[in-house]
Length: 151
Length: 258
Ligand code: SF4
Ligand code: FES
Ligand code: FES
Image 1 (tube, rainbow over the protein chains, first blue to last red):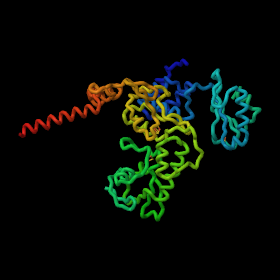
Image 2: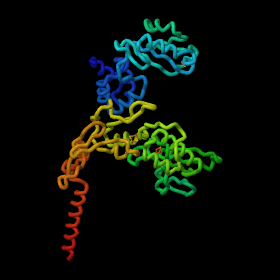
Image 3: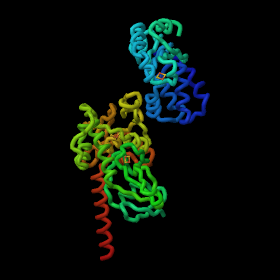
Image 4: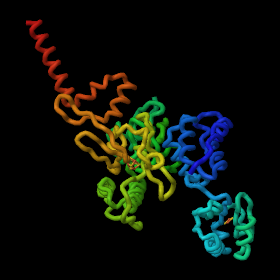
């Protein structure tokens, strides 16, 4: 995939160029490109003086980072205990059928990424679905369509 | 000077020494898989656990990884109490479940009388026990060519992007120090392949035996200021050369003294 990497120096400039800034820089790259492109990892290693292996290790450790392109809209279904009991499984099934992708996948047109996460700390409103950064509580199967369309 | 006891015997150590170092110095055998004196301890394998207590703890004791525990005045260390042995057995039991095909784990298990695992066996479990020694040693060598990748069950050791590592020099430090011999490499008459990358190897100019990779030789030559030619003679021939010189010196001294 071709990207405009001219944004990178600006991201590096936001922090001091040393190994301590690694996670902050990766977060910003993730936000900018919706994933961590391979070239960006290499540039990060060079600019922060961190071995590439370390950059890779950190990028694959945290779930917040993705090494494959992710969709514009990120839908997260909570499958923590409370949400699980209150029907997260059915929600997942409904999302998967409507989007034609499985949890953990991104649609071909890069519009949607569907993810399953653990307790997001909002059990009182279970089951919870997070679209981009917005939390939706007491979601039931009939809301899925609307969430996909509008979030 | 720090004074404490190991299995009832009074010992002395320097401030900052780790328990395991002193235990070993005393000739006591405590198992370990992730420890190497050249690199920082990391407490990954949990096998070096010992029981510690102090006079003022009133009979209360706790278990610590001795490789990571600095010596303390007045500490009372027990390396083979029934509880410690039980703990080690449990750890070995877990290893046995996860790495049923590892000869090193089997050896350890039989040493501790663990005949079979009480957990569900991962039949196709690989031999990497995730001790992280390879990555620490690689970093210590100054390459950091490999690292842990992923997390949890899927964690593994791999080069960045799982591609042939550019920072690797084929020094084999990882493979040679892996406790379970998990890291594979292959050799040809004039090449060596590890982590998916093939390196040219140098040959001894005297006997033709393979020495080290050109990349590693160049690295050493640059960082330690040793001429490349030095690596074009194998250790055996170096030794022979030294012996010859020594012989000449001895003869010469004899002649001079005669
Ligand atoms: S490959 Fe060997 S040295 Fe590296 S973590 Fe696995 S067992 Fe330890
Ligand atoms: S289980 Fe879903 S928010 Fe806690
Ligand atoms: S040697 Fe101490 S935990 Fe491995």
